[in-house]
Structure formats: C-alpha cells, structure tokens
Image 1 (cartoon, helix red, strand yellow):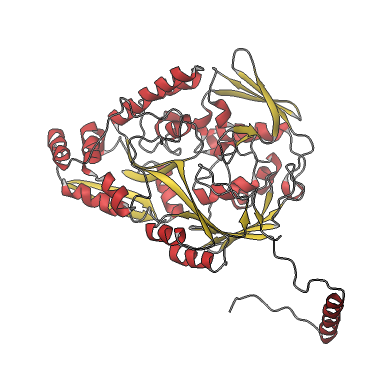
Image 2 (cartoon, rainbow, N blue to C red):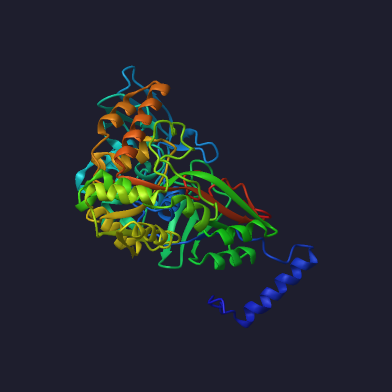
Length: 517
C-alpha cells in the first residue's frame, strides 16, 4: 500500500474523463500526463534547526542552501566567490569599510515584504548579539558596525583589514540572510519555518519522514526547472540504494558505507560522484578538565588511536588520513612543520607514565548518526589498550548539540565542514570567541593572536605562512585530534541533469532539471 488516498470521482466525472481521453486520442494528443517535476533527494538524518544563527549539521545546511541567499556565494563547481543577492562591492583604501550594492525588487517568501539593507544589518547584528547565543559569533570577530545608508546599500566597518572577510559573508551559516520581520514575528517558531529569498520556499516538515520545498517562481535568478524538492529521510543506506535503483528517489546524498558505495558504483543507470570536501572529522578534547589539562595526556591519546587503520579498515579507503583540521582542498593547506602523531601505543604509554596518569576514565560523546555512532568504538578500544578507560556515549542530535554547547563534555566527535577558507574551521575550533555556546568545546586559548594576524595579512604568501604557524602550534598543543578527512559520495539516477557536487558537504539542486520534463 502506498498510503496515498484515492480521490472520489462521480459517475458524471468518470464519463467526462472517458470523453476527454477519447477526444485526446482522436486528435493524436499524448494520453499520459507529462512527467512530474518533483525531485526526490535522500537524507540520512532528520532536520532540526534552520535558523542561520544556530544552524548546524549538513541536512539543515542543505535545506538552508535552497531557501536563503547571501550577499555573495560559492560557485558550486569551483568554489569561486560570486555575487548572490548583491550586484557588486567595493573596499575602502584602508581596507576597513566594505560597501555592497543590493539587487532591487527582491522579495521575501510568503509575503514577508521587500528585501532591504535593513535585513542585512539585522542578520549580522543578531549574530554578534551575545543574547542570540550564536555558534558563529566568533566568525565575525573584528566587525565593528553594520550600516544601512539606503535600502539598497549596506556597509561593514571593520576594526582592521581582513583578507578573508568576504568568506564570512558567503551564503553559508552566518552568511545566510534573514528577514527582520519574519524572525521578529515568528519568534521561536522561526527555527522550523524559515523565510528566505532563495530559489525554493520551505513548505512543510514531517518529522522523521520528509521535508518539502516548492519552487519560488519570483526568484531573482529565474524560476527553478523543478516544481518541488522532496527530501526523504531514509536512514538505512542499503534501503536508500534500493530506492535509487527502483527510481523511488533521484539523488542519494552522502553515502558513507563502503559496501553501498561499491554497489552503486557498479549499478547501471546510476552515476556515482566522489569529491574531496572541506571537511575533517575530529575528536575535540576539553582541555580544562582532569588529566586532559596535561598536553602529554593529549599527545598520548593521539599516539594511541590507530587512525590509519580506521581509514583503511573501517572505512575501506573511502576517507583520507588527516594531519590537521585543514584538508588538501584549502589553498593554505600545508604539512610542513606540523607535528604528526603516528600510531605508537608504546609512546602513548610512556607519555601517560610521564604525566603520572593511570586508570583515567574518558568518555567520547558522539551523535547517533551513521557513521559517527560506530567508528568511535574502535578508537575507544585503542585507548583502552594503553590504559585509558574509554567509553562511548551516543546521543540523539538534540541532546548532542545541547551537551556540546554546554561545554561540559570531556570530549566530542565533530565534523568541521564549510567554506574553503582556512579561517572558518580554525576560528570555529580554536578562537576564544568560539568558546561554548560556540564550537570551541576544547576551550583552547592559544592562537587568538595568530588568527588576528592571518586575517589582517593581505599578502597571500605571508598569510599562508601564518596559517602554517597556527597549524604547528595547535597540533603541538593538540586540543583537537584530527581523525580523518572526509570525501563526499553522492549518487543519482539517469533522469537527473545539471547536478553539481560541491565541496561544502551539502547538496544543492537549484541547477537540476529532470530528463523529459
């Protein structure tokens, strides 16, 4: 049973329908209706929060990418920054004032009025307001003032030049623009009733089942080719693979299981895409509690975990090894001078003895999503082999986010995904302005000075040298242990045209059409 209700049709309606079919046949018209313009995308987990000030997790970010715009955005294929809701910008000669010109005649979804510079001002002031408790407040460090001199002009005033500031305004996380009126009127309901200016409008969410978006016919970039997008929640990857093979879904987002990746790679009529992403998965250590205050203990843990075996064995080569929280997709990525922690249980035991630590009880907090609920187990086993009494605590998404934002966990497993700008993950994980409720759950304090220097350095080569110092210092102090660098696998059926896989570890189908529609 499909569960779909059968519409009531009267006898007169049946007769009329038969007559219409006969007339169509006589005129040589096609008897079948045209194909649906609905695209079905698989999600592996449910959504929870669509407010850009608090948004987290790739499913939420994927929905937001269809609903919202930023002043600028990343080209999906190249990561080049291009105009979005702005038509251009200028930077003052001292590098401290950025002025953006906005598109005219842009309207918010669902009759929430005209988009103006006041909405941009509201968006970023709201992020900066401590009362908002935004996880992204640290991303806007150095932003002094947002001005809206007229409805189509917005200015950002910085305390110092910032070479990477444009990344902070891109359409991702804190860069997604919200409506002052919608946020104010909807209050707490806004989190799951987002209002944007993007190519699709949020229609409804059925918890544990699906999210539906409808096309925005008034979109300033042109109406989408699709009439709606349905994000279906299918947690089991084998079930999702079967659904794709049976044409019950069109796009399978974020494959994780190696056996399912192999299966779909061999499936006729299915295209499997594979792209390195700007994403590392890490174990964040709270450096303010117990033995974790001692850097020798943190280094011992890094040596104790066989991360290469995790990549080669557990993930069967579908991930990359990580030497820091940056991946090779970042222009400023380097391994030169960055300490490494090869698997060495004897070295781990020696460091623990040196630190005078024994019978250390350690808890890894992770989220109940595949594969985050599974791969920490072999790492905990590795820690146990050197004398650390490690256990794994798996929480549902809401409880996990609450535990992490409280800052009271011993450790947590987290992905750091997003723009191809090194400042973003480094500020997220290491800046003091990102302390809880931000995402610096380690409460690390060691590189604020270098992060400020890097953001103010306009010479690309000199800036890269500062990032090298940041990576060297953070991997020496090791408040965060990189576990692996991620690869994003996406599969789609033969009917899907125009899909571009990005490196942000999200899915965006704004450019997609369906063959034959």
